[in-house]
Structure formats: C-alpha cells, structure tokens
Length: 246
Image (cartoon, rainbow, N blue to C red; front, side, top):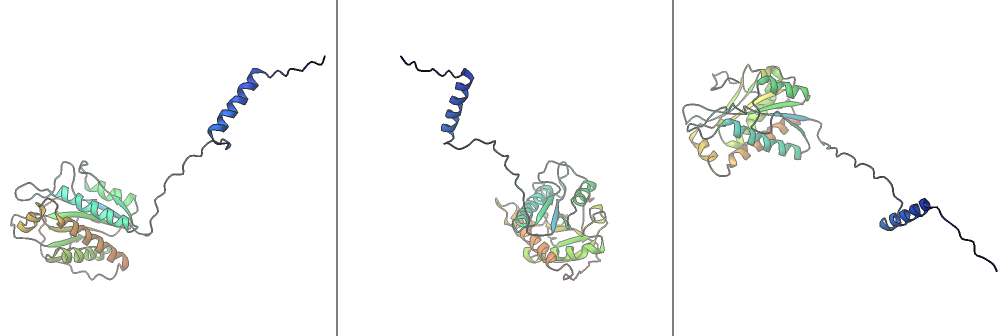
C-alpha cells in the first residue's frame, strides 16, 4: 500500500507565510515599502526684493497716546504693519517683522540689528505722532542717510495722498534705526493719533483708517522698488513735532 509523504513545515515558516498573506490582503496586494518622509514645504517668492517692517514701540513702551489715553501707538503700529506684511507677501515679497505681537519690549539696537541680520533690501519703521494741540495733523517720514531719502519720499507721498492729510515733507532725524541700518530705511509717521478727527475714526469698531494707511505704505514701497531714483525728495527744514525719544 502506497503511503503519502507528509511534508512538515517548521512552525516559524508557517508564521511568516501567514503574516505575508495578512499584510498583502491589507495593502491590496501592493508591495510594502517604508514611507518616505514628506518633503518640507518651501516658500518661494516671486520678487527679488525683501522688506523688513518695524512696528515701533511694543511691550512696556506704549509710544504716543491719544489725549484721553485710550489709544496707544504701540497697538496701531502693529495693526498697520501686519496688514502691510500680508499685502506684500501676497504680492510675492519676502517680509521680515521685528515684532508680530505686542509682547516684546525692544530697543533700537534690537530693531536695526534684526533687519541687518536678515539682509533686507529696505527697512520701514511704522510710527504715529502725537501733540498737545488736537487740531494738528499731517504726514511725514524721517531719514538719516542719503540713501534713505527716496524711500522716505515715496512712502510719504503715498501716505499723505491716500490719507488725505497735508504732506509735511521728509525730515532728517538722527536715530540709530536709521543711521545703523545697512539698507535704505525710513520712519513713517502716518498721522497724529491726538488729532480730533483721527481719534474719532480710530475709535470706530473697525477703523478703516489703518487699512488705508497700510495700503498707502505698500503703494509707496512698490513705487520705490519700481524706480528707486524717481522720487524727488522735499526735505522739510522746519522743526518737526516729535515728542518721543526714538
């Protein structure tokens, strides 16, 4: 009588075969491979220029105050700067910010040092003015280096025009943010928060005044980049109203 030969598989072999069948079923028959790590997202910029924005003051330094003390410069500087940042980034520019919240208390060395370390093409420091007379209101921009004048003029012209307030010209101001920055830089003094009309507009639930100013600063920056030599500087030699240390 013929006997059938029994083939005995080692136990380990059976386990491996079963595991393979289960894995194949789970993956739909596809071979299993170690998933490659997802490549990091790289942000690309269509513009070759970069902008370092410096919202003035911050932290324990509120800057200028409205006459009733309810509005401070620290807050509105940041609100304008954040809108400028978004608009420039949407247009393809790389933007650096010396601060993005109201938490840090910064000195001028922090500001120009940061922008210099980023090798930005230009630096724009955003400020607002104050004065004891609530009828005073105009736009100005500050410069220190000769290379600052065209940028200061371009931003001032756009800001004054779009805000609909007098253009008081640019003024030379000895400030380390301007004197120690390695790129063309300016301090934009958009308007006086102590002015009665400005205060009324800023006190509204959604002040469009800041959006108008942000758009004007963006316009001034883009005009400057289009032709840095086009702006004809009008330097104001009259004493400037600047009731602040920086």
